[in-house]
Length: 302
Ligand SMILES: Cc1cc2nc3c(=O)[nH]c(=O)nc-3n(C[C@H](O)[C@H](O)[C@H](O)COP(=O)(O)O)c2cc1C
Picture 1 (tube, rainbow, N blue to C red):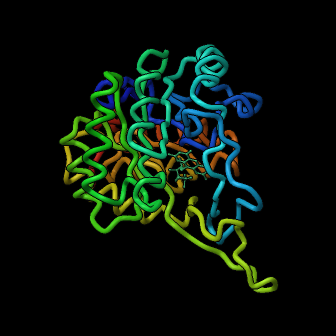
Picture 2: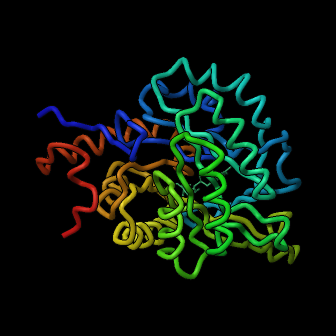
Picture 3: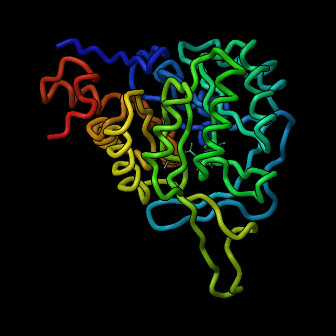
């Protein structure tokens, strides 16, 4: 049977449901040596800021059982260099470009969105897990009032397809999802990393120079599945799901929970050809269980 793998993320057409997650794929250059990037339906590029950033200093990655904790920070060449150097590189491939944006302030988010509005990107993904400098460094995405303000202002700053990426580090993710939908986002991506910490018992110091970081990988998969299931029942806009996907079977699990498409993150570090394997796995599942299209899978939880 020929399966229909296409996905419509409410205005962003994908040729298949497999994408890669921001911060785990750079701008695709390193991975192009291992896998044909044309397999991907989209790439969410490393988090962009207005100015270039070096990221955090010292040790910034710690391995943990079934995952890793990172405090890489927003190491990136800045939005202008991205437009000059990375968009032409990515345009050699048949994939959609999702620009992941980050700011210290709401004004900064809006400025990057306005700049990208004039650039050749297919979608803007608003990472609201950044610390809000004007609000004691608390992440934008944890305060419903701030979420409302940042999403509504960025929505006005661009007419591009807009994805808002949710943090799992909140009390009520459904409330946040509802606000994001009301403020005009086209799509929700979830989940970002879960806060975590590791301690070296010999030095009795945190393993990471910054103390704590974001946990990713298979360890967070059950958290992602539960939160996606909750948000799927709360909003009508589509969900781009991520959090510990390591196989085609995992991708199917996310879709059954309610994700219309998925992103592979930490799994790329373990196996740089994982997106290809995941696509094959999803296609085989459609065949085995006689689904006509991936879209029939979405939320088909019995
Ligand atoms: C090293 C690293 C860097 C990341 N950088 C970003 C980023 O710049 N922007 C963002 O929105 N998410 C970032 N993330 C979060 C991932 O995109 C993803 O949401 C998260 O890791 C969960 O998926 P996974 O378990 O498959 O990795 C980063 C994750 C890792 C591991």
